[in-house]
Length: 180
Image 1 (cartoon, one colour):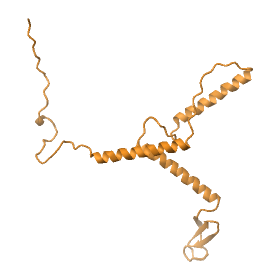
Image 2 (spheres, rainbow, N blue to C red):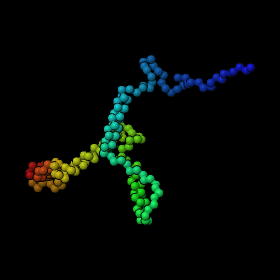
Image 3 (cartoon, helix red, strand yellow):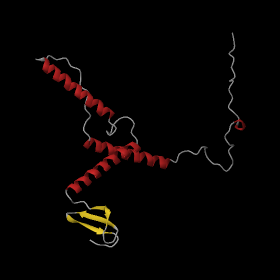
Image 4 (cartoon, rainbow, N blue to C red):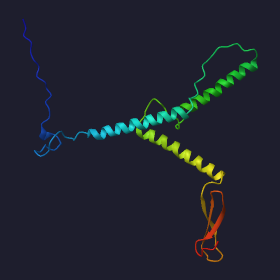
């Protein structure tokens, strides 16, 4: 009967003197490198969850569903014209579906979702809404507007500022002499 032999491992852990890391000192408590502060990590995760949830809700209410790729189908058509029209319609739907898949402005409910992407998506919606509101205010003449004219005042030589909006008639005033 043979006796089992043990094979000694050839690998040995490196000694602290052979590594580039500084030797721990008695005043250094705990693990090195310092672990993450959990309350900050929890806050980051909570903010990320809130941003993505808000973005999900807004996208669900205001973003149309993506166009689905048309399925291949075998059908009998009454005429060649009808078959051609059906083919062209499927081609148009395929182009729209590919555009929806590649559109960077669409919020996706799957895939890479993080707080930065959610915040940027929400910011783009806010900026779009602000621009639309500004255009409506200008069209209805309810926005306060101010412009500086390129022509100087003939009396004081200062710049002429035009003020208007809010349903009032526009007023021009010289910044130098105050002349209206």
